Image (tube, rainbow, N blue to C red; front, side, top):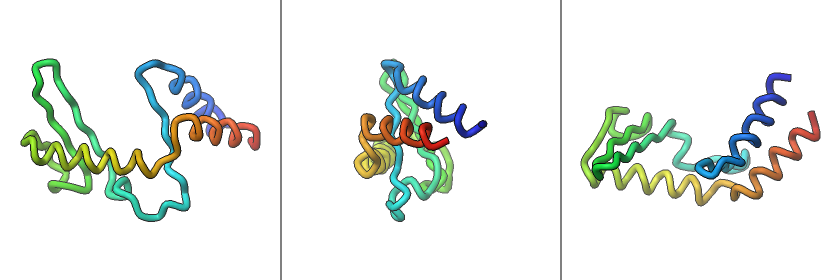
Length: 98
């Protein structure tokens, strides 16, 4: 039941304008997401800070070159993941099976 509620919540959040849900296929064994969480925060003044468990020893970075590496890794993860529409269909399918 907990898993079902989590899937329902993902579908609910995926309807927000500022949220895009993408599922990484389980058959994709190697991708840049296996190194852990990637976070990049961009601020209104143009500055940014990022962090990744799998890069830069997990410490926060703010140098443009390091931020670009994190953004490229994130982009590669998104490219390997299902599209938002495909992800929604998969989640709905999983809901139907529970």
